[in-house]
Amino acid sequence: MCGIAGLIHRDGAAGIGQEMTAMLQALKHRGPDSTGFAVYGTAANDEYILRFKVAEQEDLASGFKIHDEIKSRRATVDERLKSLDVRVLDAQEATEYAYRYRIAYGGDLKRLADFVEDVEGAEILSIGNSLELIKDLGDAGVVAGQYKLDGFNGTHGIGHTRMATESDVDIRSAHPYWAYPYNDIAVVHNGQITNYWLMRRQLERKGQRFVSNCDSELLAVYTANNLESGASLEDSLKQSIKEIDGVFTYLVATKDELGMAKDTMAAKPMVLYEADDIVALASEEVAIRSVVPHEIDTWDPYDEEVRVWRA
Amino acid sequence: MAGVNEQSSASHEMGMHTEQLSGRSQQTFFDLDEEGGFTYTDSFDVDYNKRTEIDCNNLDAKQINLGLRDAMANGYGTVVIKNPGAKHSIAVGILNRLNLIIEGSLGYFGCGLIDGPNVRITGRVGWSCAENMMAGTIVIEKNAGSTFGAALRGGDLVCKGSVGSRTGIDMKGGTILVGGDTGAFSGFMMQRGRMVVCGNAGKNLGDSMYDGIIFVGGEIKDLGIDAVPGEVTDLDRAWLTRKLKMYDLLPAKGVDHFKKIVAGKQLWNYDNLEPTEKKLIL
Image 1 (cartoon, rainbow over the protein chains, first blue to last red):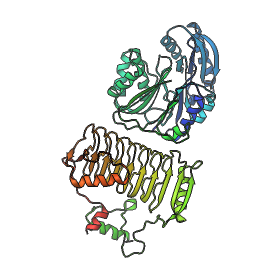
Image 2: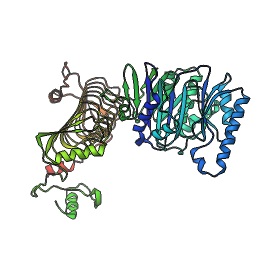
Image 3: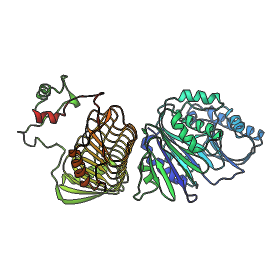
Image 4: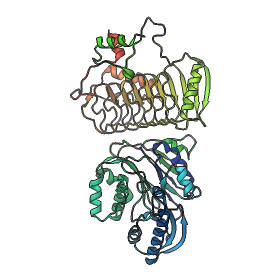
């Protein structure tokens, strides 16, 4: 089933970490397998936030050697970053297997991403000037607590509670997906994409990479491919309704935008609240009520509806 | 109530089916001569003059519904639900008369499976409001989500704002009134009843409808398979005027501009009656 939520403040930064946690916790019943957040803080143009992991949570139960392997994989990543002249300004261990690095880097992001992901078990969750993407197994409260999201201030964010239907219960298949290799772009999705393999093969032939077999990843890669071709976010969202088959409602966030698209069948839910200072949207109104508790006017966007808001 | 075998025989004689029913599919027939034969086992005799309130702030759906049942069991006929907070499955399965006022918004499946109460909701409702409603009235002051009045069987279901997609899907009776617009696939596989949309209707209106009537005051994006325009009669106009007036939805310019959509009956054309209708005929 899955639940998705998005929130954008139009009048400056707020406690987006806490707000997104409340929204996704309210949607827990739509998917308890994993929870993910893509939140956007204050942009620092000469720095990137690199979020990556070197193992899955379930790997920790695979034996005694895994702990040493994790250390070894992280050391390899560190070496590779050094070899690319990446300056690590700050390194935090969010969990034993997932890290947050503040880096200074002037080179090609795709090269950086490919070189890091070449290390066994390594996956970049996000690279961005303002984007921080965290995802793990468990509900919103557990994941936000684990990654200390409560104190995060920012302008907007998207999030996802996952009920695994098309692929495994692991971090790799959890949302949001970072739109590799573009900084600050993330996607969450509720639905099923029926021309996944066809579209995936087309995008792979264009040089795009996939890290999972989750159909939702296609939307991130697809969006990245469109933006790379010069399309605006709104154009990409509109185009997706024509080119992607299935039932879906999805959200895309960039450094300063939040967009949504609903498929032609309008089979997946979305409730929207739009005010002068805030726009909140979620699979269910109960999530919006967790951040806007007073009586509000909400509505369902219709089939093929595309909307984009700026922070 | 008649015994199990007698029920099977009765339904076979009435031509409803030929197979042997058992378990949950067993049909139940009311006996006019039996005391309380027309009363549901889970319905309550209430007094409209007895009023109570339920504050839902720190209650979950089950606690709210149990509170409501408790109030009805104690004879309260007017119940005000405060701070529903868009929670799901509120006020479901009410099988008796009741004046229910919901101050706020409901989530999914609000007021589903009800038979008799008059409900007023000051906020919005989520998906599948009034699913399988048998009788009574529900008036929603703001907007409604998709599958509004799915499988509706009776009563008046009114949304003064706009509703989502697949409004009145599979409806088998009753009336749906929408003050604003409705989304795609409204009236999909509709089998009976009437739907009135004062605003615009999305694509595939009335797709695969078996029967029933849809009136639309605004623009129709396109019609679904086997949905065809019908002739608006004087009787239709009189009914529309009366019904819309009842809920303050009558447009200032009247109802002359309303279009009527009916089933072409080229795709499906069944004539099975509801069990209660068969009983009346027999």
